[in-house]
Length: 157
Image (cartoon, rainbow, N blue to C red; front, side, top):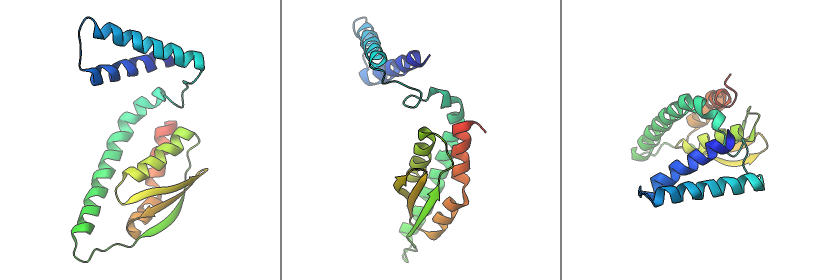
């Protein structure tokens, strides 16, 4: 299942990047993908962590929520930038991640960074050092909504 999924993703990616759909290039792409998958299998470099296809059904719910959060934060940062008083209050805070897996921790850290106005500056174990442009942005993050959503994405619970 894992290697079949990797092959399908690689082939779709190849099709999108190639833009060539002839009787020569498509079989060549299939052979290339089969070679890469065989090599990855022989080397033992493919695993559930590197290709977390099992998270796809939960991603369908998480990604739209994250997109909305990014849009809201973008609007807030835009208002701050356009305000002549530039009402910023830079804040550093430590956030504890409740995720259990490396994929969950990385998803949480990246979700923080993708949201305008906040950036994960350092990750040590399950603790993040986060810089927020405003104190209210830091308080929103400290509230834990994003942590709970990422945990639900990771575990399904």
